[in-house]
Image (spheres, rainbow, N blue to C red):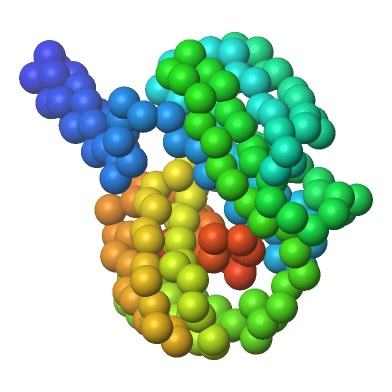
Length: 196
């Protein structure tokens, strides 16, 4: 019986180690801003390794404060930020936490030819998915893969006109994941897929 309990403990420890392993640097805080498709709403995703107070400030290009919010004693959150009633232009979302200050620049503008870009995610094999993006791409593309609010992978791609890439997610212990594809300014798509 003791041998069985010991072996089971080793298996659980190994599984916990695999689950906690992530392509994201374990010492860094994760701060990502993505635009909701077809809207002037941006989502700030924040994740930290330790609980801390976090202040979020939105400023225009002249450093005028438009919005400020403090989230107390948190390891992570998602915060929607609405830019519906602001002028087109450059803005900054600034995050202050125990690790320092991080600023994310965004441009609020009309969609332009981003409406002509299409994305598709298709299952290639068990746990493998092909992401295809087609259209007049000139900016770098970011691919974010989440399970719930936890970022599993961030991939930066410099396409010339479009691209296709297979993501192997067989080692991910979750049942459902979310792909978000974004340019520097716009979220092109957000789609949930099922691994099992």
